[in-house]
Image (cartoon, rainbow, N blue to C red; front, side, top):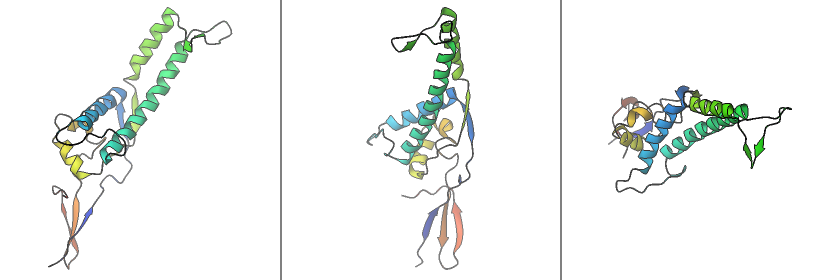
Length: 174
């Protein structure tokens, strides 16, 4: 009887960038959060260390929070009222705004949702979780290519004496 060695091939070894709008990323994070908090006889662990999927979720969340926070702060400063010398007017640690400045700020904050963010996706490499998410309709389409691979990762089996690999795209390790 020959012993079979199982290796998981990581298809996404190249750093491929993805561009999504802030609004699209928010929808992706919402779908991922829905999956993370979906309970069905399994313990919900909402932390970065709970699983590979959680890790990928928190990495993407950090990317968007950093960018959106920076853009929001820039918009607040740009539209804030200033005195004759150009010094921003601040009251109780908040910027002050004229009526036109406040309108401009609100328009700038709304426009942030349409701004694109280019990032390297953090893909969950746990095929059990990915298989579960693939059946998690309608959210799978949002998560594919951003938090989980679009296709199941192939499993390479090196069989017996000939050591010729065979690839099976549907088999999942138990």
